[in-house]
Length: 362
Ligand SMILES: *Cc1c(COP(=O)(O)O)cnc(C)c1O
Image (cartoon, rainbow, N blue to C red; front, side):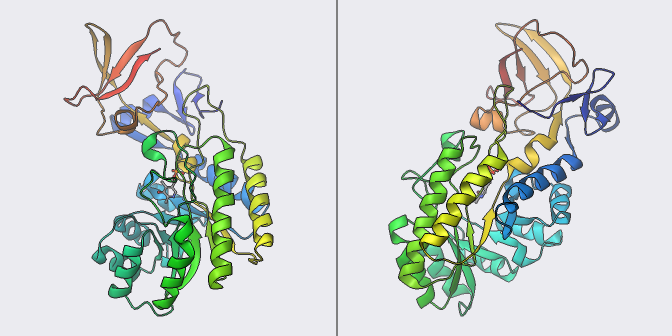
């Protein structure tokens, strides 16, 4: 286990060398505290693990994980690129100094105006449907424009049904058996398709489904290469690399993950004679999750049918527990050595019964 939880000599929670209680007193609560060095470390660990086996490798931070301007700026300074899923994220990334070529836009069900806006920002468009392709051709000049497609590798994985983004139930991507036809259609419209993308889900701790997705995406890319003659400049396997949330979960063995998946990637490049395109990955939470802490203050303790510990934040501060039933580890930052003597519900301050951070938590 490694939840990146540290304790200082006052038995307070330590966040990147700062005392959580001092921060709460100085800034009030609820407050998000972000450890800059941890983000830098996570980025370098991730980049290092994969580039070791395949130097032509780029990391695109899936910034929906945390679009805080300071967080994105830290990653900008490390040389990271951005995976954006909304025009607002593209706009934000541009403002922070990412140039268009460092932004890949993977939109889903977007309007003509949004397609045009993203194109004008210079971001590379990763197209999700034939509808978007045909509409893009009408709102921009397609001649020679470099684009990419998201395909459905028919594999899905994730920590919750809502975060599985591949397979027959998924709304994302071009169907595997239609890929060649769609890439050809793009060429016929004047575009220059240069990339292929897949993203199977989020919160993946098990390397097996990821491996299947790499294999399947490479088979689709190989077929498209054979059928249309496209030489891919990049192949992108998305993100979803999980992080432990509970003390029982393990961290992903990154070196093994990289070795296995890049081994497969290289095998398939050779099998289909596809040269050496740049490999992209799009980690989101992996880079930032364990660098971010939400501090709240207990203001009420109520013993009714259950014991409720009431705090000054709620699902408007942190949505995941209410939305996905997600486990977020909770500690008493002021008494890290306090023994667990009872189990309580930790409740937020919003007028809805779903506003709970945890049930039966020691
Ligand atoms: C959400 C998302 C990711 C990253 O997911 P994480 O689980 O945060 O790594 C990557 N690519 C796309 C297209 C996404 O939508």
